[in-house]
Amino acid sequence: MPLGRRIAPGIRKAGRRVAQAAATGVTIREVARAAGVSVATVSRVVNGTAVVRDETRHRVEAEVSRLRYSPNAAARSLITNRTSTIGVVLPDIWGEYFSEVIRGIDFSARQAGYHVLVSSSHSDVAETRDVLRTMHGRVDGVIVMSPHAPPRALEGCLPPSLPVVFLNSAPGGALQPALNVDNRGGARAMVTYLLGLGHRRLAFVTGPASNFDASERRRGCRDALSAAGLPPEAGVEVEGDFSEESGHAAGEAIVRLSPRPTAIFAANDSMAIGVLFALRQAGVRVPDEIAVAGFDDIPIARFASPPLSTVRLDIRTLGERALAWLLVELSGEGTSPAVREVLPIRLVLRESTGARGEESAAGPPRTTSVSPLVPGTPVDSVARRRKAS
Image 1: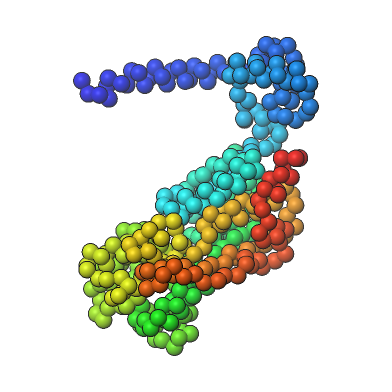
Image 2: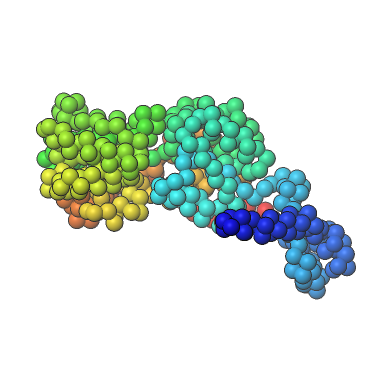
């Protein structure tokens, strides 16, 4: 008999037991009855909303533990009008870049006493709208990364009362705080550096045409070539989609070009790593024959072979800053909801361009309007105020 059929009855029984346990969950009234106190007293102990005598609190806590009582989150949210949950909508949830963004948000959210609900929009505007509608009533605020859509395109599915922070979004109509990376400046700086090494024929592996980050990085490349007085054909643009596979395909195509570029700049590190693999397969030495650089400085970049030169943006800080802005909005202390903050970049120069761990300087974050949260303010300062309220 197939294994799946042998274990199916056991799975069904386990499922029934879980369903039965959920259906017969202990209520707050049962805890109150067992502890010999009122329902209000149990609520005060469980929620920590008021001082209760130690003897009473210990008795209630003992019954909560014995009966395995768990407060009903839905019921609690109806009373408090809070879910203690933050929604996060990303274009994708696969790969080091997005995992680092989530890590930054999650770390700061836990400090502030929030849970995180994450969903992917798959870089689709309609799906982004659907995800945001699904989160209505389930979250206290939401962080939306939408480089494929301007905030104006999402306004119809965002209630005016819902605090929102946009992250790496296309410009247009943002009435909420928005954080962006200096994509254009970072790409311009990297291409300028490659030109300074003597490279005069470069290849740029692009990101998706509809992606705002990718288009800004393309503009930065063109800016650098123009500033150096080089003709457009000095920079060959090869299509990519931010994946390792597209970088590998681009690397294979670049190797076949004649004349062959002497430097390749990929619009993100994942594609750059795919390029490195393609060059290795083709027997092309990096950086002796072709220099390679990326963008983002994902954790694996330093362990690539050879270690990858890249434009560093502190991805985890990006998530932390987004959460910090959202906490300000949740606290009601935000005085300039349309503030736009641009996070700085650094060039991290490694062996893939012939360097040995050099790093350029970068300035502080930039804001385009008066900021209710001073750049660099620790997230937990807002978290402490929330917990104290």
